[in-house]
Length: 471
Image (cartoon, rainbow, N blue to C red):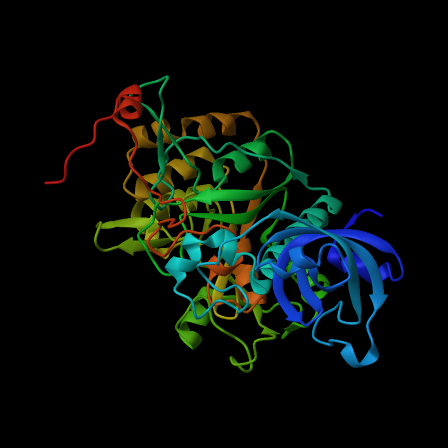
C-alpha cells in the first residue's frame, strides 16, 4: 500500500491503497455513505457502511474537507458505472478515514466552469477558483506546453539561459517598473520589459542558440486583456537569416499543436507568409483572422507577417518611434541593407525604410514577434536619434551594448512567442487571465493579495523615498 493519485487507482483493482484529497461531494443513503474524493488527477467514488467504526465520522464529513482514506479498489456493478468520469467503473471500499483538515463553506462555487462568477471575486479567492476542473486542466496543459517547448529547443541545440530580473531602465517602448535601491539611494533598477539586450549580449558571448521561458514586465495603461507581467518563450540565434527563424518557429508551433492539442486542425502548413502592406490592404489589420470559419474553435490559421515599416509617427509626441523596437535591422524597400544608404535615408527620409521585423499571427491575434537585429553601432545610434534621442542619451543608456559590439558581434536575430496568448487560443479561453495561475485584473490589481499596496514610512525612509500628496 502506498499513497497513490486517484487516477493510479485504475490499475489497483483488488488491492488495498491509500489516497488523499478533497471531498468533492458526499451522499448518505441509509446505511451507506458515498464520498467522492477529488485530487488533481480526477474523482473517485468511495463508500462506507454502518458496520465500520468510521461510519459516524463519515456521516459528519462536509464538502472540501481534506481526507486520507485507506481501502480496497473494486469494480463497480455494471449498472452503477459512471461513464462521465475516467474512474467511473471502479470504487473504493473504505477501511479507514482520517480528517486531515476541515473546510468552511466555500465563498464561490467550484463545480462549474466559473465564467458566470464575477471575475473580481474569482481572483480574490483564486486558490479556490483553481480547484475547478477547467482551471486545473489549463494549468496542467500550460505545464505540458512549456515542457514541450523546452525539450524541442534543447533537442535543437539551444542553451537555456536565465537573464537578470533587476536590470537597467532603458527606452524600449512601454514604461518600466522601477525598483529603488536601498544600498545606492536615489538609484533604481528596472524590471525587464523583455530580455532583449541580454540575449543580444549572449550572442556576443558566443552562445549562438539561446532560449528562455522569460518573465516580462511592462507598466502599461490598463486594458482588458493585458497583464503587467507575462511569460514568453524568448529565442535568439547567431548567423541566421529571417527564413531560418521562421522555419524554426513554424516547426515548433506545428509539433506543439500535434502533440499537446491533437483535436486542433491547422488550416495551412507550411504557414503562409504575407507582407505588412498586403494584409493592411486586404484585411485592414496586421494580425488578420484567416480562418475559413471564425466560429470553428478547432481551426488554427497561422501566418507570418513580414516587411513592416521601420518607423511609425507618434502624433501626440511629435516624433518617430520604432514599429517593433529600436534594435531591428532597417532595410530599403528594395531590400538593401548597405550601411551608407541606410544612414543617408535615416538622416533624411526615415519613413521610407522597411524593417527586418516579422510577426506570427493566429486566429486574429499576434502571438509572437521578432526581428533580425542591428549589429552595427553606427546604425543603432542613428535609429535612436531618429526616435528623438541625442547621441549622448544613447551612449548613456546603451553604452554597455555598444561597447560589447566593438569586440566581434555576429549577425543575429530572434523572436519571442507569447505563451499566455497561445494557450488562451488553444484552450478556447476568452482571456489570458484564464491560463495564468495568479493574474492581475484588467486594472493591474490583485484582489487576493490586495496589491498594489502602501508600504511603511520606515521602508520608504530606508530607500530615501518620499511620497508626494496628490494635488
